Image (cartoon, rainbow, N blue to C red):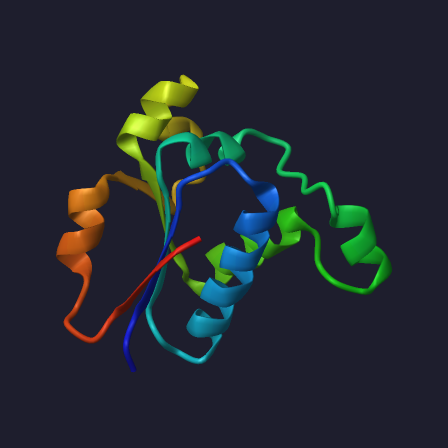
Length: 121
């Protein structure tokens, strides 16, 4: 099955929510899934991870943004933080969950197989 790579380039928690749901679904069916937080999107990694719609989602029996993040990691979604974005946010990779790797656009593009899907969120 083709892999799925989602690139999130803005620090929008609700776009992250959608990207996490899609990447987790891909991983749940046993297919490769990667989420690349590019540039300013890395700012979303600042704790606590809270979405503006979390209360509404929780009331509907849906997971919060932090729960979706944890689930994605547990499902094996490959998460990459942009090295330039880390510098912009004043963050160091070694302060993040060890399952998050650093990288850049070249790394992401070099890992795409011919039949993979690349989505900008």
